[in-house]
Image (cartoon, rainbow, N blue to C red; front, side, top):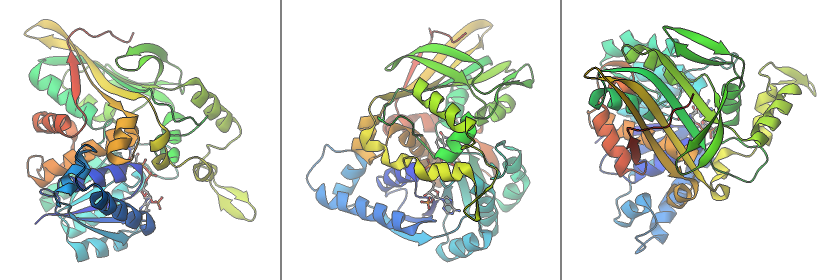
Length: 420
Ligand code: NDP
């Protein structure tokens, strides 16, 4: 029987675990290991209580429905510092998982990959490695593990959330079914949700603020074009949400898609931000609160952005307050049989529906569901080959089917409105 180790128990991890719990036939045994084990124990208790109280109630969501039939996986908890390879190795050697799903933070990617190699465990994550002391992320650090994973006969799937993740699967699907060549990709990530706070982030605040306050960049004609943070702004009318301001950001899937989509000329990534978010962010930046440089405070060293994270709302608590929808997808332009083709594929996700189903808002949901699907395909051997891969390097079709079955149905059109 296949055992799965999940590392982390934050906003995204909780969705991954609740969705895995609804598929005990694929994930019969799950060990959840995180820094704060009390959060893991509370989650397990809540999943089991939900089962108990949901007896006979059939309209409250996939995870509960599975549980009603008495089919929960065996769920266990453990404490681990995932920055420490030796601790991870001890944990993996005692539990002997088939797969490790890393939904802790990008800082832990390499230590967890090292432990997987040492223990013969397959690996999946949702965000590429980022050193703690440098606000910079790229795949080179993880791609450097390719030969070692190949030699060990192990598979590592990188960036299996929504973006990166589903955006790569959408790209592979578009190329497989509708294009001979894709020349242009615009990835549009819209969050039309409102949590009622003047300022809060929908996933880990430290990682989120590092990402959005960095310089923007896009890929064009074989090289990166850099912009000042938030320099390029567009307005787009999103299905299910309405008109929103979008800003060009650097984003990690641009790097892998530039390599994996042959003939690509340009890839850009746009994310929506409201004015209140941007005004608060600018103010926090101006006073130094987003800095990653340690400062002396009361006789000890603190890092301003880590302190800021401690005072901001925990994204895992936004679920019950968030209303509205997300719309995330990709617009493609290219050629099929020498004729021009345009194609837009996206998912619309409702924050309140997500909360009803798994007690999380849609950002954690849209990340956690694809991570669960990736883990499912790896466990079934459908997405599993030795080496280190980005999601667009696998057959997209089984993943696309599972999106429709697991709460993230997609919509496609061949007559999209473009972003200029
Ligand atoms: P959270 O901060 O909510 O959760 C992180 C979890 O990791 C917490 O449970 C935390 O423990 C645990 N953790 C942190 N450090 C360690 C450590 N050293 N050892 C063990 N556990 C640790 O983050 P999110 O759930 O919002 O994000 C999780 C991941 O998902 C991030 O990598 C993020 O970048 C990625 N992401 C990807 C997206 C995509 O679409 N691809 C979109 C959104 C997020 P503790 O409880 O003690 O804090």
